[in-house]
Image 1: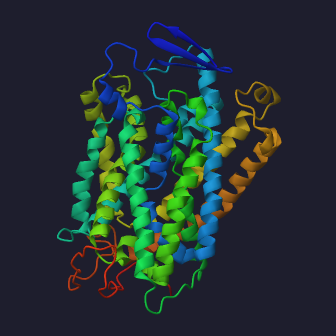
Image 2: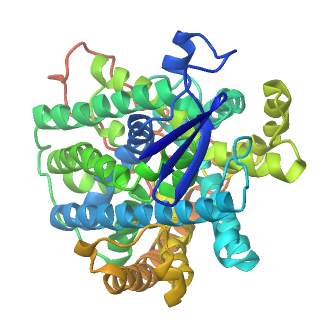
Image 3: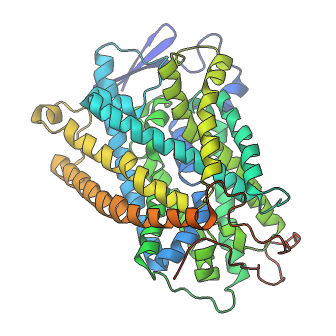
Length: 495
């Protein structure tokens, strides 16, 4: 690697890849050391924390529900399988980003005041039609990803304070999440990503330990899988779980050396599996088929101080994840109205506010925590982060000249270009048939069932009848009180 300092800038050359960036800690007018430590991130570690924190959020609470639909074995195998598929397509996206940026910087394009996004990568490599398709899917997915975080906030807080219904909590948390308009970019999520991962780590191990200490409920059954609709609904929730790399390009662009991203998502996924596999398996082992009627794992565990702490930490983390999903939408909106390069943070924040309004509204219309994950996974995630990136890589390097001049050549252990193309074709076919086809059918059947059962704008989705008393909090990880009440007010029809 060679480096050359030019005034206050640094040019980093890696092979044919050139990145111009500000020299950290040496330019005049920089923020204080405290600000740089907690606010200005761009290292490999920052990217890892961002990927891991963004990947495992509220879905941690719905994976036991998916296990009840899939069965223990299928649940474990599909997590491993989709984790690998997600890591591969994140790697493919990183290759396309580096290829696009290298070509543009050879043309002397300066990106210091511009955040590169996925649709721009598609535009630069494949043209406007690819850009339009990528933009439509990416924005719609991130929009509903933000909606899901808002729904999860209302669902979780209800388990420690049911004085207000979930719709009212959605209003409150919508206003709270709107404050993410003041976070300029992914550079500024350093401390939030770190804290977010600590919070989900605590929650995952709370679910695991509390379920094991609780033991199996009397007469527990593990009948899954019992129906194809339930099986593919659960499978698409896991597809959604490991499809959090729709913000890969924005995370890479926030890195000081984005060419070092390649394996970061895989390493983040391996860590995430140490959280998702034990927690989902333990909760399913303890409660079995009861989870078919309880999409939020918190609803089955007795109320304790430890559970309340997990709920609070998840609420904070969902605020962070809302920002992760919404920040790319802020960028798109800024570019559309000509505010993206504005240096005034307050003006940009004010310009971003209209993005939050439709998210707020959709969370109130479709408060179906759990089933909405599978629907978004099958209809949007399948194309946004699996099919489109794999096809884009194939078409970008379809010619011999493009392959010869590629910035990154596929490694030997992937089988070079033949092996890479084969893996991409497999992903496209598999996700199109299983994820979008069967998964789309199953998740839409389940989603329509929610509308038929509860209606749109339902005031308190899956809330127990008012007559059901809520047990007071205890101060241990578990309780010797009777098992929590399981009311037939939930959503999954099994007949």
